[in-house]
Image (cartoon, rainbow, N blue to C red; front, side, top):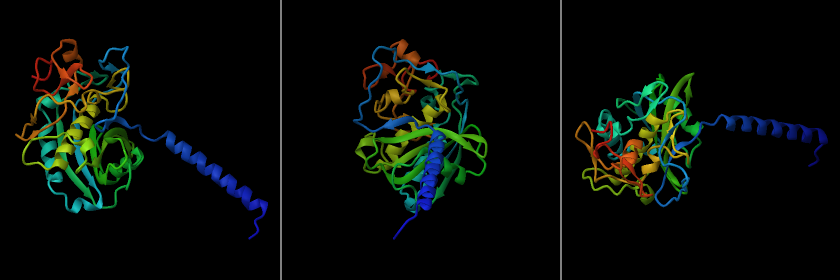
Length: 298
């Protein structure tokens, strides 16, 4: 088959335009924040700086209006994970655990402990078969939540295993129809040793226990750094990042009486007063609401 020069020029011009558009889209890709790295992933902190969190001149969430989205074809047989996460979100608000975030302030006030739960949504369309872009997850939120609110926190749980990804979850932010939203992404963690909190709480499947722990991580980070202007340290680690895979005890108790093994969150106060428990770096600045005398965890 013979090609003339004109179609080739047109083809190259078309490819150049497509690449330009793709580059522009990537510039607007929401950032992946607060990545909950799997066990064994080694991160290097800035050894010459204070481990405490620093404020970056933006807002925090004084309250959160949450909803869970379960995305994927296998959520027609969810086991205990949908009902379990309903119980988790119903009970987390107002607890000493969530109050471990309350020492942090922003341009709009202090982090609050109110986490209203609007229930769950199930979307049985096929979820991405691999780690999605943040924009893919934002598009799912905008599709499923018809009337988002500005303090909305929308947690998207897919039925896709982690595979080769080195992380369990992350959070981000964007907008739906001009309305600011905060959202998070979670892999399916059934049988995933790298994202397993090794909980001994009875009555919960391993997959539910794993989702509960990483859900605490991402919700706490969203409260303290909802839109990339909140709190993180000199190495870029947010409050839950600094206490990942570090637990103050076998479980924390929620307001509805449910118990969950959840990592703590970094407290500048507890580190400065040597009243926190140690993270994996040996720094005693972690709080899960059960250890006192943190300023807002009693």
